[in-house]
Image (cartoon, rainbow, N blue to C red; front, side):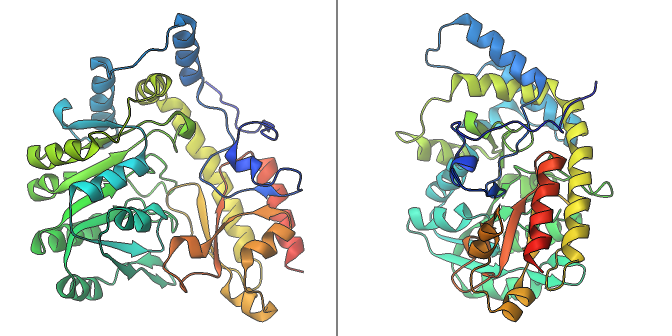
Length: 384
């Protein structure tokens, strides 16, 4: 079946947070991780059928939903889970915050990083310890020797892992994951692995491996967070899930939810099940389209003086280094500069501690090719 990713859907004047930011301005919004594609036809059909029922009472998670999740993980990652390991959530960010509540103590993570990784520990009054990923000519990576020293000198109970990584777009390899698992075992850390972008692997040579599948010890100390929101573009429907194999860790997680986490959105549950069960062909078509967009962004950016980026292995997010250009032009805020050029991005300082990565930007290329081409044309014009 052919799917249409080229049609530009006008989201201006709608309830879109992404497009409302620049209402009344000639700025293309390419910031928040919200694609401009319609949801898969199978998801739309499932929602229409549920709406036709007409009653939207409190919902409960069905056995068929759990089975869809079990089957999905086997089909995509050869990961056989027990349905009892599943905990349903109203979003992945809530999962990060619940994890920090359920695992008291210091929190370790690597920057640049998706902002809730830095705010969730603070919300729960936990110390945050960060490690800066190393930006080399071949891409971002870990300095595990430095990580080991930092873990030895700080009191941590939790490692928040972004896998694949947002914003740098890395797919962590097995050897990197095994070293993370070794360090977690040595320092007795729970590893909460945010794997929301696991179905968006753009590099055909790479394959996502869930952290929990490394070995029995990694499984026992893992909380894996997943959601259909990024891959199937349904973030507004608010559904996600955690996979927590260890009974005590799962009980602590569920206890941390009490009185805080609401019933899940009834339509979100329908969309979640349809995404997991009926949309594999749509996802494969999406990946091919995003690969074309990623190549266009990478080629264009790296041809511009003073700009650079690494190839995006996963996600639909480009992490662009503007340091050389900004220093040559004496630009202190690339976000303002690009907005003046008609492009709305996420500023680099949102993804790091103060003073780090402020001259980087994150650009969302999950949009029709015509929109992306227009944005890149504006970028080139601004560089003149």
